[in-house]
Each structure stands twice: as structure tokens, then as C-alpha cells.
Length: 376
Ligand SMILES: *Cc1c(COP(=O)(O)O)cnc(C)c1O
Image (cartoon, rainbow, N blue to C red; front, side, top):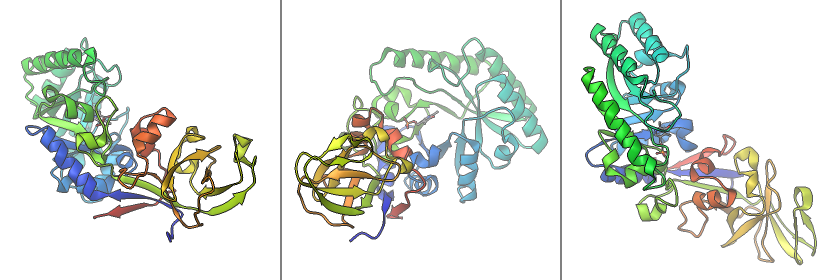
């Protein structure tokens, strides 16, 4: 009998295998394992360590605080952090040898000031907006950004280690924006070169582009979701078809199993009623653990050897499944998702029925669920 309420097992061998597989997809590029948002919910530090062991030359984070946490855990390799706001901890990043990103003059100016204050040379990746329309520098402002960066380089305040951008629709292979973004990136690189910049790494590819578009690999690929074994989208393929193995298995111990009569309402709002006399099992996980409330009535769960469906509403801490008369006992395991090889659903199955993406299903699993690491 299981002795935990719930847990998310993270198979670090799967992370290592996925990194090796991704390196085979992009054999001429270096690989950055993106570990933002606590490693997409898997735990940034253990996953970063596993990714390094499998040859990840770079780690990527959104916030600088996420990068500092990796340094505090002892990582000494290249780390890039790209989500900055005015007044951010540039000095700390420079002192900790973290590569930073600038999409605009304000950021470059703050980096130069921080570098002067530390007496060190900042490592900066200039980000072009090649069409995503989110962060990145618009083409009209790019000549000014590269010229200012070149001047700061000449002064010794910084070194432009990267020129980079990010795709909008790489998870829809063949989308016309993909070729347009690559053309715009080529133009941004030419202008940077003409301004005298010679970046160590040019990078544009996320997981879907790494898996489907070799022309986007350049010197470095930034892979996130695929490191954790999830396919970026059904259009890109299934995990298994891509050679990836989902690293997270979310399970819980049944808190109660009981017989109820025909027509019994189940959970808040009585959105479900038993069709006959049956057995209900209580799964002690809810939206407080990151199980989407949108899974009410549709979320798949493996209980007592069969796939079942969430009966009625997902509450903050628990939900119910109807075992349709099958037998189970309190303490038996319920598996919400995993790699799928024991017949359990996958995070991709949960994404489909709740109208989201696998990325969100794993990332939203909250800190209330203990992470248990396998194959450390
Ligand atoms: C999250 C992120 C990635 C990784 O994307 P995946 O689709 O998970 O591989 C790469 N680059 C940037 C800028 C990101 O924000």
C-alpha cells in the first residue's frame, strides 16, 4: 500500500535520455536546457543537473532569480536569463557570470552601468523581434541597439555573446510565419555583423523547431518542454513517436472507497449523479495541487487497473472517480498521468480534455505535491 497522499515522481533518467535525443536532433548545435518555472514543474535544480550530465552546455531561465538559484546549487556552467525589467539585478547577474538579454536600449544602458560598477565585462545576448511580437527589438530599432552594443563592447563594458530570437508558431510546422521569422533573423544577423558584432552563439529554436526544422538550429537550441519528455504539440508528434519519454508521473493514494446508491449526487454542484448503485473512490488531489478545475467530468485517471474519468467537479483538495462497481481500497494508487506505459493517461491526454497544452499541465502542479526523484 502506498504511504503518501500524493506525489510527482520525476525520472531523471528520462531527462538525461531526452537531452541526448535532442542533441541527436541538432548535432551541430549546442543545447540549452530551459529550466524556467522550476523546470516546468519538475524541479529546476535536479533537472538541470541531469541535463548537464547528458551534455547540456547551457541552462536557460526566464527570471534572474531562477538563474541565481542554479548558481547557489553549485552550477558553474553557462546560464542565460532573459526576462528583465528596469532596475533588475544586473550587477548580481554579471558577478555570477550569467549571460543576460537585452531587447531595448534601456536594458543595454542598465547593463553598461552595472558592468562599469562591477569592473567586469557583461555577457549580453541581443534579442531581435523577428515576428513573435512579444519581447525582442523591432527591426526599426535594431540598428541603434547593435550600434550601441558595439560601442559598449569597444569600451570593454560588455561582450555580445549572442544574437537571438524566438518563434511564434514553430509548433505548427509549415506555418508561413516560420520562414518569415528565419528571413528576418538572417537580416538581423547581417546588420549585427555589419556593425562589427561577432556573437559566439546565434539562436532561434525552441523544442518544436529543434524537433522539426534543422535550418533553425544555428549554434544553439533552447529546448524546454521536450527535455521533460512532452511533445510541444500534436502537430509535431507524440512523445513516443519523437523518441521522448515523459519524466513526471503524478499519483495519489485513494483516501476513501465507498458504496453509494443509485442517483447519488457527487461533489460540489452535483454535476454528476451515479447511474446505479456503485463504488466511488476519493482522490486527494485538487486545484490547490494544480489539477485543473476544467478537468471536472473529463480528466482521465488510472484506478484499479482501468482508466476512469473524474466524476463531477474537481475541488481544491480532492475529486471523485466512479469505479462502476469495481473493487478498490483506501490506499490504492490512482495515477493521473505519466509516460503511459502502465496504461495511465499522459499529460498530453490531460491537455487535450482540458483545452490547454501539456506545458501547462506539468508546470501548474503546485508545491503542495512533493517531488520524488528517481535515478538521481
Ligand atoms: C520557454 C522558452 C523556450 C523553451 O520553449 P519550449 O517550447 O519549451 O522548448 C525557449 N526560449 C524562450 C525564450 C522561452 O521563453
